[in-house]
Each structure stands twice: as C-alpha cells, then as structure tokens.
Image 1 (cartoon, rainbow, N blue to C red):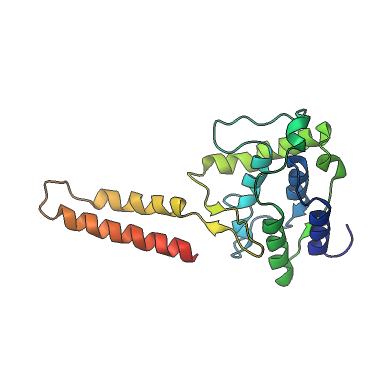
Image 2: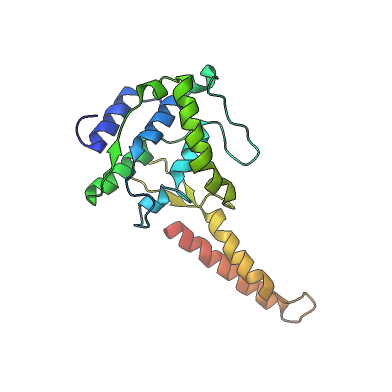
Length: 202
C-alpha cells in the first residue's frame, strides 16, 4: 500500500465502510507492529496477551467466549456478514498514536483474505489458534474493552479490575459473629468503590 500506514488504513475504511467478517480479519491481520509486545501505554492495550487485537480477530471467527465454536473457512455466508464490532476507529487510533510517537507500524492488505478465500482463511485460522486463542482463554476476563469512538484508546474493563480487589479483601473479612464485622464490610465496600472510580479514570 502507498502512503503512510494511516493513509492506507483510511483508504480501506473508505472502500469498506461496512466491513464483512472477512474484511475485518484482513484488516486486523494487516496491521503489523514489528518487535512484538511492548508496554508503552498504548501498544499493550492492543497486542497479546491482554490487548484487544487478539479478541477482535476471534470475534471475526465467531468466537466470543470459551466453549464457542469457530466458523468454518468454507462458511461463505458468515464471511460476507457484516462485522458486528468496532473496527476502523480502534485500528486508526492505534496507527495514529504510534505514528505520532515515530513508532514503526505497517499496514498490508491481503485481497484474497478480504474476499473470503477459503485457503487464506485456513492460513489465518492456524495463526489465530496458535497466537490469539491461548492468552484470551487463559484471561479471567477481558482487561480492555474495544473502544467505539474515533481517537479513543481501549477502555479498562471495570469488571476485570474488580476481581483482584475481591481476592485480596476476602481473606481479611472476619466471621459474621464478630461484633465489628459490619465495619469490615463497610471498609471493603469503600475499597471496591475506589477501585471502580480508578478504573473509570484509566
């Protein structure tokens, strides 16, 4: 693709304003961040093990939670169906943020994959099984929520932030027969509330 990565992505958005599952998969496969996972405050929200890109690819395959079955590469009806989740805004935000930071990022386009070619889908599926599925299955919950808005980074999932706090507080709570048990419950409630407020500010 010619031009910058962001220009290439915007060109694809103009070409596919309502992307199918096959187009979404091609776009997600095509955004490449060389050098692997990093913790720069932006990239970690997107890449494995906790970022949104692996989950977004799984969603294109019809997988939303453990126990779900993947769509077949030969299911042409599915691959023509419109992708039901935000796609272009999250990808444009990632590319724009990295370009502003002078980070290396490329966007390449597989026309056969975007058209739902069974062979290319099978190749992509092998990568999804090996690279995307394991960390998503092992995570207790999605750490980041796919952002719908333009320029919006992935949002911290309050439900996921809640669990570690509960695990820490539970052993400290006294048995109900203690005369001060209600004070402990109040303290725990305040901690949970503070944890949720921090999650909203993240």
